[in-house]
Image 1 (cartoon, rainbow, N blue to C red):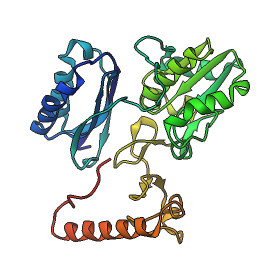
Image 2: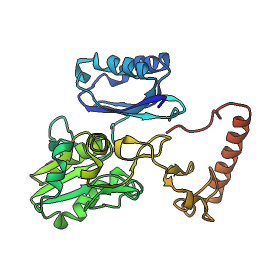
Image 3: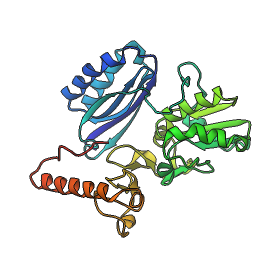
Length: 304
């Protein structure tokens, strides 16, 4: 594999997060690292990719800040650069829930190592909840997990309130891709009356990296937010592709459906878009193809 991919996050107080943006952007640009990093007063989150030594330089740069010296990083590999550009963005939250007062720096659930995860989720006293979005759950999840059918993480608090009576086991276990969403979800649930709350340390990525496939309770693939689309056990790249209009995962069979037009729509988003949006996507796809023929990357193309 030619590139190293680092998924990272850390909930920690960063009151000066705005001042961190420029030096971090320059550091990534210097070492030709690409991806997206989010900075907020509550911490840092994102995924970056580059040559192995370049990723090491950026991670060391971040960890030189004492507040980030134990930064949570999950490594994997990619056969080609999975991002188009580098973006360091300032946000109100590093993972958007939209509920005031939810702070994993103050209150958080019990971290569970991947090696202990199977025992917890097969305990009959445990209810297992997938905190990811519906299109992510659709291509893979843990056996027996509850799917909240949310389209964004903002919907999770409302789902909890609407289904409080159904979350009726003594232990609540939650998981997500890299650990950040379920960490914030655990904080929310503890603040809202749930007492015995657990979440998978390092998320699905760490579980797939460290646990033997023969003993795994994971079924399917894990969606990732880059050009690899999804990974499976051992963090190997999966065979999923992606609709570049809505960014949802699609298969080769999905591409044969009438709703699919490369760069314009798929069966997931065909009925969600207006004719004007489809026309705009069609024009974008045309410009992408023209740029490709010239050996260039279309400058208007959105990164992931």
